[in-house]
Image 1 (cartoon, rainbow, N blue to C red):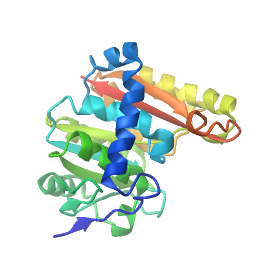
Image 2 (image 1 turned 90 degrees about the horizontal axis):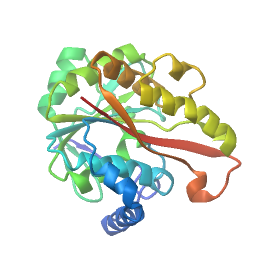
Image 3 (image 1 turned 90 degrees about the vertical axis):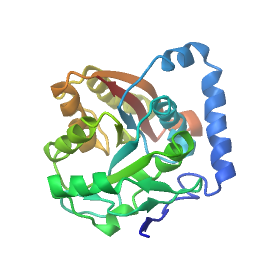
Length: 267
């Protein structure tokens, strides 16, 4: 059996199942103490999400909100799309494997959907691309909230949004499939400067504005975000910002921060 092995367990997220569960419990305890926000989240549904991918201590709370909402719906497959940070290559790579390891147990890869995507979009499998943290940090959250769901992992490098957009569109046309777009926002500005850049990203996502996203927004997953906005615009999806914060919320250091957002899209 061909497995996608863990690469960043113990660094970006806990390596032990008990520690993962405790961390998620803490995220939810904080969230549940904000009753108005929780009531709002409980009304939301969507089949596409933008989520961050830093270490859980920094961005896990923001990502967790998206997965709580995801868990209230009966998806059979979750497609996770993220940028490559480790290796450069042309285009998009798909994990043409059978199982995906997490500390909470394995997730089944949707091999039928993988085969269909490979054939329809000529997507190769570059093994070195699949040691990627931007996608891997999502998997324990998916396993916790949707333990029986199947997953597909896609990692992109040197490509254009126009190459990713049809993949997202095809997946979302399968009503039993959700799509996760992985990105962080601005990197290593002061808190005030980061918020200025990130405000442009947030407004572009909220209003599905493809021109605004190029007017000062910075995101390491910009290709995936822009591709998602292209799909949202052409399909008249609604966008909702779920949470925004920076690493300073966890570290207290406002001199060099990274921005994080979670958002959902719904028909």
